[in-house]
Length: 200
Image (tube, rainbow, N blue to C red; front, side, top):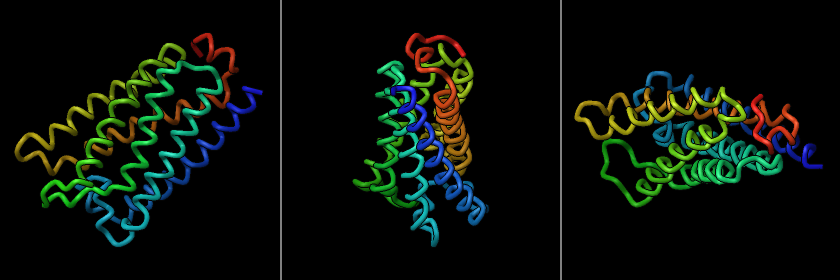
């Protein structure tokens, strides 16, 4: 029963991920000349006002479903809770928009910023915890932490703000890789292997 539920939730995670990626890729194509902006800033564009939040929610739902699959499979509870923070954080980002880059930080922008930071820390942390079972998660997690440090630096170092968008894309790419690996592994690995932490 647990194995069936695990695969069902992993399948749900895959479907939500496809939806989120399709919407995000569409926005990236439509606004290809604005890659210096963060993805969150798409909410101030014509189509992004409707679709940026949809992409965030879809990837958030995918992540929550992947966390549920991990829980059902009996995986490490610490990793489950960390992935949960990331998934919930994406939903918070969709609800509380970031202000435009040239404006002062607002209360909803602060919520957006710190929810994003929490999620961007906890997901690669979960990836490192799960890398015992799935070693392929380690390079994605390390890359995520390195790019996150660079992303944060673009908000601190004078003159680096124009690089926020591109560094954020690398962070998000690494994080999507983590969720993608989880979905693939949880769809195929027997539940017993997840519980015992056997490499696969």
